[in-house]
Length: 374
Ligand SMILES: C[S@@+](CC[C@H](N)C(=O)[O-])C[C@H]1O[C@@H](n2cnc3c(N)ncnc32)[C@H](O)[C@@H]1O
Image 1 (cartoon, rainbow, N blue to C red):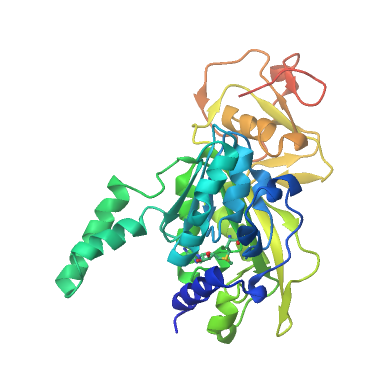
Image 2 (image 1 turned 90 degrees about the vertical axis):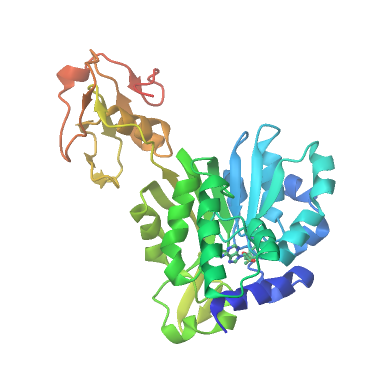
């Protein structure tokens, strides 16, 4: 059996009957938010972490592989009236289970901020309920029918995407990326990047392995659908997001104890966070940043080098990212004393900004007041 069929069959059963083997104890969810959820949703939790704590008021959130909908129903409480939550799952039985409680939760929350979409998370543009409807009217009986279906799907991805480009503030997921075939994992990370708006965030709880997983374990459908043998290695997980262009990629949470050990390989739950870069061009107006320490020197994903305590030249976009984004506690931003006309330029690694160009200007940092950029 191919691994994707194994995943479909196992999660169809798990939607009907709770499967204890798929439950990986996760750190405490917000008890107040949890209390609002129907018991069945809490019980059929097949996650391994809590990405919902990264949700902010007003966010548009997409939950990849939403299952029974627990993370979506938690997130729906955090986003408030202005936000929206979209759960994505490819499994009809899981979607039926998640949607079963939508009216009840809408009453409790005072409005329906939630929608569950049928799609593969590695192809977030293709609405699989639309595909089902198309196939009901156009059954595939020949190679020519199949070619017509593929062409229709391609058009549909562009004209009516399930999740549009740059439409999402936060992508979350809980124990799902490991279920996606290895050959589709790169596309999956690209899809996450596509749907996020510039500056959008990622919070993904998943299982990682501490060593490469041998092929015979990967071919075992039980281990694959059980969230084990399809896991990224701990190194590849972060690398995949950095290579797709995300910034500030890090392990926000790390399970000290492995969840499972198979043939000596440790599988543990982690949460990755990252940010999609702002798409503004690199324009130099004379900004600088100082890395506070404690490390002697750090290098960012764009190749800029920041020795501790040194006033380094950065373009306005980089200054904004370092002083207002997730790394703001680590950097002091300094505006130009006399802003000059913007020049397209991104400081080569190691370029210092002479103090004479920034002396007396606003500093961004604890207690110094003012924001140098952004
Ligand atoms: C381990 S469960 C996690 C469910 C949920 N996130 C939770 O925390 O309980 C995996 C879910 O992802 C869905 N899934 C697996 N692979 C998928 C894919 N490629 N595209 C969409 N959904 C997928 C399954 O149908 C299942 O509902």
